[in-house]
Image (cartoon, rainbow, N blue to C red; front, side, top):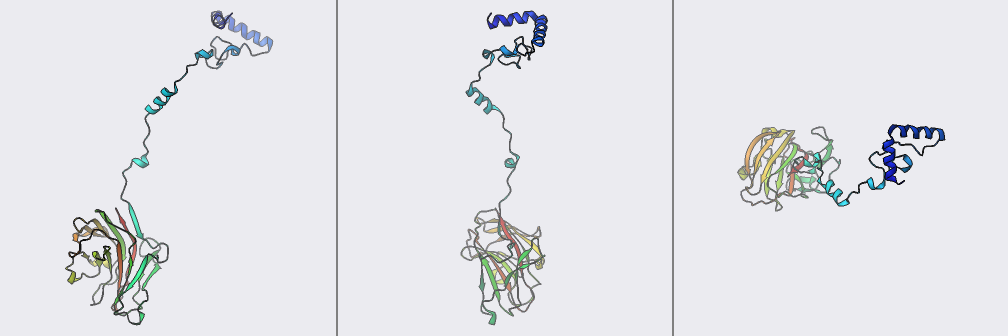
Length: 285
């Protein structure tokens, strides 16, 4: 009797055949004639004894691997929420001074005309401070000097795209009243031209172009030079502690500035206690 005839015979036998086989199995103590999946084919002759839809090898459907690949490609893919979110501006930190020491990218530049016997001595140090967030700040110290001023410069960055915003924290010191040099922070072109100067006192000779002063600069304050435009040669907004104090501040009228790559911090001196503190200088594009 072939396999197909045997299957038909067993299916017709129905319950009687199944009971009989079960009884024989128990008498003989074997498992060869069990039908685990109840499909009418005993386990020993069933290609898949636990799958009632498969009795022999021909019942197994072959899958075309090319069709499987196409089906997999048709499945929708889940989006990654981390990559689908709109990206914010890129923030580049020029210096936050959190290394606790002065970076070699800074260099001291002195006006030696009025510094007397202390010429060549740096007045800038990195000090522990609670003035701003973070542990360390750049601080000027007027004590070695009675007159004149000194600067510290860094130029290892480049801002040349319209729309950039420069921010920094500063404490400019006491109100400037004397005829000497005020504290100030400059952002300049590669040629040294002043694009924007934030200072205790406006320079009348410069006709206030590119210069920013405000009573709140005594500090500590957060200064924002928002939306710098090299095309229009101006800073669209200037904010002190998020409050806009001026708009459309033009660059130096005598210059054609197409980039900014220098920050200059100047500690003024004239027998006044107006030490400058600067922290967290950065820009976003």
